[in-house]
Amino acid sequence: MANYLSFAEAYTVGLRDILGTGGEVPSVRDPLSKASDFGRNDRPYRELIGYQSRIDDPASCLAVTPHLPINLSYCFGLLAWSLDGRNDVGTPAYYRRGAHEYSDDQHTLSGAFGHRLLTANGNQLEEVVGRIERDPAHRRGFALVLEPEDNFRKSREYPCAVGVHLFLRDGALTWLTVMRAQQALTVLPYDAFLFMGMQQYAASLLNVPSGPYIHQSGTFHFYANETEVARRIAEEPAEAATLPAFPGTPDGGREVARELIDFEQRLRGAAQSGDVATVDEIAAHKANTDFADVARACLATHAYRKLGDKTSLVTSPASSDAAARLIAAI
Image (cartoon, rainbow, N blue to C red; front, side, top):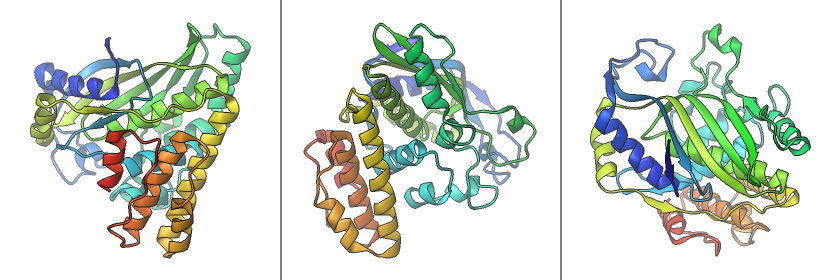
């Protein structure tokens, strides 16, 4: 397993590894799978089997490249939606087109990772954290996303994540994400951001620092028509961007989650209803926690763009230079 300081480094090397030694695979044919464009297109791909990376600093969770700009608003929106345990399709659809095509009923996303980890079958993450708190050497800190029923359900959703495994080792929380399938070019930046954010939240509940983040994929791949973009990023490495770390206490971690969820819901609702006053109010007041304040700046700027305001830019003193550039580019 390769070891990296930042997600950007792991992302760049992962693409190089697929380009260098990945095998060519013909298109999936299942019309219920995005891998066949839901039966509309032939999508051959290039993959590595059983690939994993270890990232030392989960706060260094962004890879910035001009060849494939990251949608930071979607990153924060996805994390808020997941920490709230929701599965409505409306939230991700607000941040990115195409979210509805994964929904069977056009209202919900039954495979939503946060929903499955936090609300669908009880709060697995809280239970696992409690188990580790009572017995720090525990090996049973595994929370499931994939369920046996997924193998018998005819659905457009078959979660890409199997589950997450938490370990308290050397006084810090190691987090292992197990993916059955990981699209390595366009989806990994969002999955990694989500799970590294959840790692920091869980570590704060345990009152310990975040340790290494490990991302393990059964199939690690990108599609044949994405090869040129992957090659450009491999040749011109992505820049690492760091966000403020979650506070290292249970109260601090819960405050980040509360603020993030609140900002996301209020700003999305305001943008969708044309409520400029609410966006102005949130834009004018700093959050109590640094991580949530960067999210506030990003999500408020996104809300202004949704309202047709192309010039208003909300800033946060907690933003790194790279994160500030991502917000300014919304």
